[in-house]
Image 1: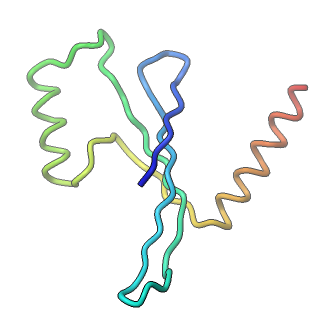
Image 2: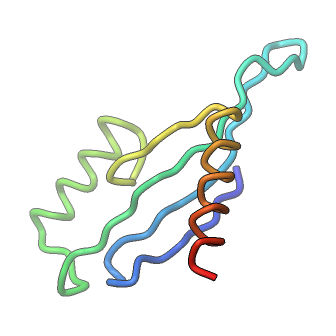
Length: 92
């Protein structure tokens, strides 16, 4: 899985974007989606022991280190692309 990060203007959050493809035993693709993950940093840039333990527990319990995620199917991802294009064009 390849992921690209987009940093927030506050430098405390990041948006990770990746493509997930799941296939069966014979190689047929049965689920293809775009995944957006939200990453966060502590305010002062240093994790306290409590924050570190909470972060470790999240990895153990859920299997991922990020704060939250949104999983879009390809049709919804294309709609998002079109909407972002409209928003960018309005700024020009």
